[in-house]
Structures are given as structure tokens and as C-alpha cells.
Length: 99
Image 1 (cartoon, rainbow, N blue to C red):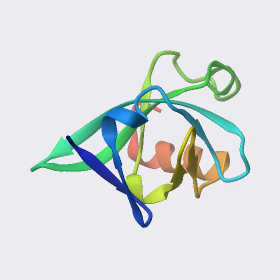
Image 2 (spheres, one colour):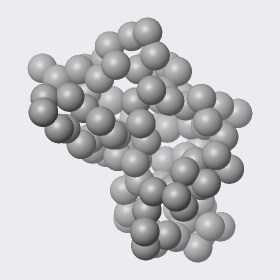
Image 3 (spheres, one colour):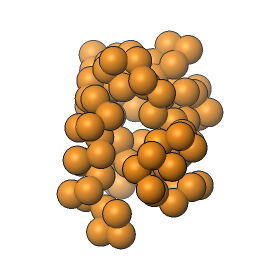
Image 4 (spheres, helix red, strand yellow):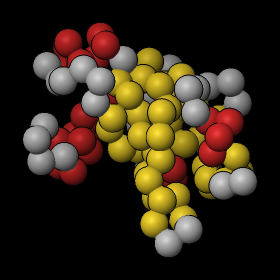
């Protein structure tokens, strides 16, 4: 089983699939849907953005956006990030060319 290191914990990546994702102020970001693996290490998690965010930010629906595992603070029934929505938007603007 593949695990992903999130803060001080390791989680089975299969258990994170379909988990809701929230920012550090508990605003809904989206749903964890996939991950990117390179040389046996999971480098990015894929988050399908909440439709409200897609409409507000004028982003395409059904698009997966990357989140680095180091930004996950907890992953129990939901995934919580240590970033705000504004920080995530800025990160995606820098890393995604089509944004």
C-alpha cells in the first residue's frame, strides 16, 4: 500500500481518495481525487475543486489542481491544509500555465 506523508503522519493514499479538502480556515476547497508519483514517492495530490470556487475564480470545472502533501496538517475524515484559499490560488497561478 502506498502512503503519503502529511505533516508528522503517514496515511494510506487509498484512504484519502474522495475525502473533502478544506483550507486552514475550514473553507471548502474540493475533493481529493488522485496523486502523482515519481520514483516511488508521492509528490502531489490532485484536488478536484469545488464548483463554487470554479465559478468564483472562473476556472474550468472538472479540473484537478495540485496540492503538495507537506501542506496537509490533518487527514482524518477530511483533509485540512495549512494554506488559505488565496494562497492556493496564488500557488496555482504560478504553477499552472493555463490558469
